[in-house]
Amino acid sequence: MNFEEYRDIWVFIEEKEGKIAPVSLELLGAGRALADKRRVGLAGVLIGENVTELASKVFEYGADKLYVYDQSIFKHYRTETYMKALLHCSEKYKPEVILYGATAMGKDLASAVATDLPTGLTADTTILDIEEDTGLLLASRPAFGGNIMATILCKKYRPQMATVRPKVMKALEPDPSRSGELINETISLREEDIRTKVLEIVKATTKKASIDEADIIVAGGKGMGSEQGFDLIRRLADVLGAAVGASRDVVEAGWIDHHHQVGQTGVTVTPKIYFAIGISGAIQHIVGMQNSGLIIAINKDPDAPIFQSSHYGIVGDAHEIVPLLIEQFQNR
Ligand code: FAD
Image (tube, rainbow, N blue to C red; front, side, top):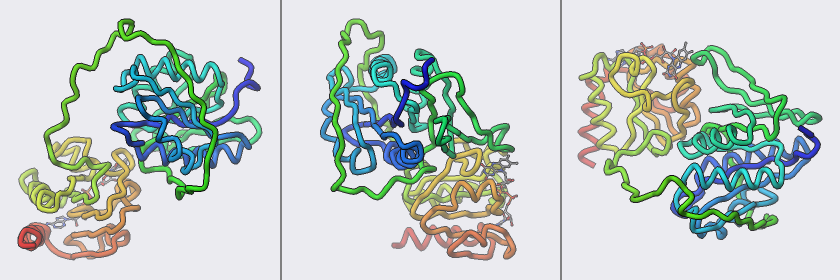
């Protein structure tokens, strides 16, 4: 491969129901830093139907260019169609790096593109850097159960690709005066050649907020004592319209599913309010929630490390305090 032909940092702009996924804006922030360090351009790739109007937002958040595939065949996300568009764009313009959000769509698409190009893909990256002179992407992520941070390089292929966890990178402040170059692209795809058909979209009926999007998270730890004790966490979350979070020990005890685990080997969250109840505050938990707007800890041990990372703390037995909170919030 002639690496000289490959330049620019790209971000796959994930769009759903006319909105850009927050992680794509975060990646434009991270991509801007990489592009400036390498002294190259930052471009977005946007695929969908009636999506061109989102271009100004992509520029406001830092992109210099936007490649758009705005065709009815892209109305719903399908691996095959989106992959073909991205392959077309990548083969035509040859980016040095492509970043994707580590969402269901981003992970699915990136792995398909990596296989077809072919190139390497680092999944679930949490730290990104680039070598100024060589353009080698340094994509770091927790490995071996979170015991080490591994920096993964793709030395022999281009483009270099990574999926990046939501809420880890910071979006830039949008600048409405920024604009960029819009490049409209099309590919000829016939519906009858596509193997997947979207027959119906069925929305999840549950009203419960998911942990990575919730404004309020009520998280419980081993201090809740038992699966029944942990129900208090669910009840407080219900009253507040909050999502339920948990420490790893609770997940390992089987009281709740791994999707709810906050921390180094779970999800990184930044809600407006985070309740940490019966959670000791191990560093592996703290790294996943320390950027929350307001952290309220309840723990019976006044020396529990969680109080060092909290804005408010209540020292006492969660089994006495949480029912009182539920009652008070219900009354309001
Ligand atoms: P404990 O540490 O047992 O703490 C229980 C707390 O509850 C104590 O502070 C106690 O004082 C308090 N308590 C007890 N009874 C009551 C009561 N009645 N009322 C009020 N308070 C009470 N952990 C994570 O959470 N997320 C991760 O992603 C994660 N990744 C890890 C990765 C690695 C590689 C390793 C080694 C560990 C990881 N851990 C992770 C585990 C982490 O180190 C801790 O073991 C775990 O967070 C502790 O969970 P806990 O706070 O629920 O339990």
